Amino acid sequence: MNNHNFFNDVYEVVKLIPKGRITSYGSIAKYLGTSKSARVVGWAMNNSHSDITIPAHRVVNRNGLLTGKHHFPQKKTMKKLLSKEGIEVVDDKVVRFKEIFWDASKELEL
DNA sequence: GGTCTGACCGGCG
DNA sequence: ACGCCGGCCAGAC
Image 1 (cartoon, chains in turn brown, blue, yellow):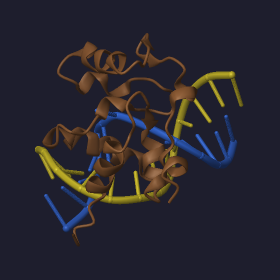
Image 2 (cartoon, rainbow, N blue to C red; image 1 turned 180 degrees about the horizontal axis):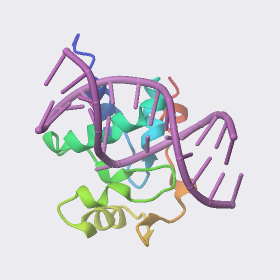
Image 3 (cartoon, rainbow, N blue to C red; image 1 turned 90 degrees about the vertical axis):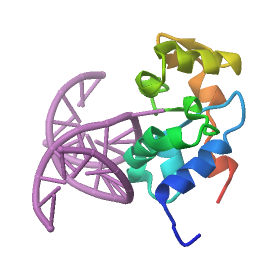
């Protein structure tokens, strides 16, 4: 579609995140070519409620912190979903963040 | 129609 | 090492 909405691109990438893996907003933005637009990625997630197929819980900030947990129906929802996929979350942050980190720029390799 | 904010990130002092 | 500030896009007031 000519509608080259940034949101749509973000959704596509987020959907491609493998189970048991996570990525950061900046990584997605970087893959899309606008590394400085990480904020827009977060904003896109805010609108991700339009598409429940988007695993927003697999997207965290660069610190591996579940910054978006407050936007889920329940605070423990994000942690619960991650735990279900084998991702350990302690104190609202992802354990082995660097190990399970999924860099779209590298994995998809534009 | 200008201004501010937002689930961020990187650079600079 | 820590704190501040600018930047990017889209939506709300």
